[in-house]
Amino acid sequence: METKVDNNQTRQQAKTVKAIGQHMKILVIDDNEQTTTMLSKFFNAKGFEITTANDPIEGLHLIRQEKFGVILLDVMMPVIGGIGIIEILAGEDTLKDQNVFIFTGANLPEVQVKNLLRRDGVNGIVKKPFELDNLLTTILG
Image: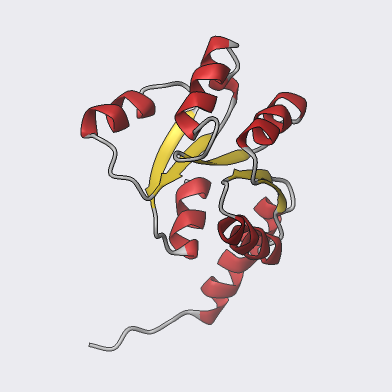
């Protein structure tokens, strides 16, 4: 069976993503510069305002200074990992005001995943490697 693609619908979806992107700031915190560069190029091309931090301490400072529509947070980083940042924000009572999506290449125990997703402000976990379009769909919910 052949699937017919509606080009008008595809163009409309692209316009919707671009319109949302013009109003959404995204912060990516990951110690891997290749990851932050790739995500920066992708989200910029979609019209999003993107800020990246390869140092988790710098990322934590950015969260405290600015309001982001989405925070993409790597779990495994030196000095302080993503879960540590989540704990700090929870301790400051500001996690609930965030829209955090964790991404990781690690196999987190199911109990840990459930506990993270129960936290107000943590809205998803994305497994690395990920497809960029799937990541976009996930954060736009």
